Length: 100
Image (cartoon, rainbow, N blue to C red; front, top):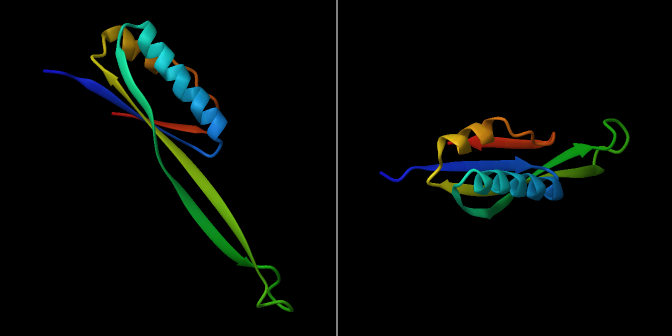
């Protein structure tokens, strides 16, 4: 039975996200596993529209947006050392990680 670990990364800053993905790939390769990725997933954009002023300028709106960048990494044929390395890996603040 062939096992794999799927790592999903989410973040607002694309540079920090790419550096974190490279750090995970380097850790997996150094422990003897093969990797596939990072695969860029579609960026989700959340837009928020708020009134500039509630009293005088009710029709004047201001729009803000938040972009969430995502990456997917598959670690193929992981070893026990790979799992141990991934659990002790220090990632920067602002990067969400989900391991399955």
